[in-house]
Image (cartoon, rainbow, N blue to C red; front, side, top):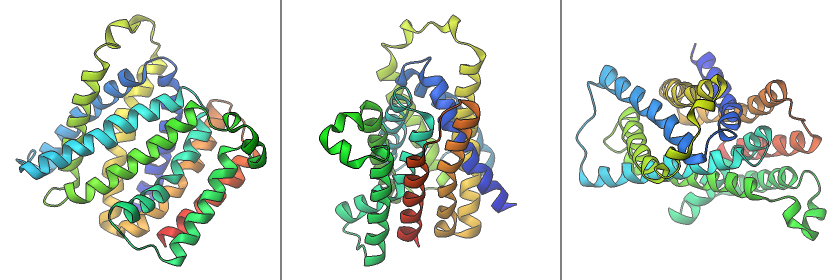
Length: 290
């Protein structure tokens, strides 16, 4: 059952790129993220009350750490996520996000001085070759002559999302000391929602709410309820049962599901460079996390 839940979890996360693509073409990024986390925060509060009897009181250090989680992993990550999906294909976005563990490993080495052995450096090297193939659509030499053909606003935003997730992961190591994953995530979502609502206040009055179709509302509900809360619960059940290292391997399924669903539901073309680059990234991530 745990393995089935982890596979379902990665399928749900793969589906977030399709839902995000639909939402980002109908709503401004900050507004879309605000609605997503209004739903997610409400459900997380219910979850915290049912499973842990409510939220614990925070120390000043925990207050600052959870605010940093909300800023990096909720506010900035989702701004980059929705901005990118409004500019590029859902399938390519899903493959970009596979670089998260590599970016996190490099950030940990740079900021926390964590040692990277030869195996990890080899994995990082393979993953970056894959990313180069993916970003340049299989034509790295052409990109050297005109980089704008390969890297646009969408690609830069998705790289920004990966960087924000790395920061969220590193901050989470401090925030989780003395806090359960549910409590830390709920507080981070509340902080992030606050940041989002403040910055989205100028967008909200200009949204044509009456013209939004059911697909947009279904997609944003999916992102908030399933992509954030249900997947979170199942993922931490996997971490508890199998350990973080074995659970992390399942992350490689997210881009597979993302690309497959984008082809099936959005009719996006699956290019040879995407398959080759994605396989190289997955191989590099597996070696790095081994």
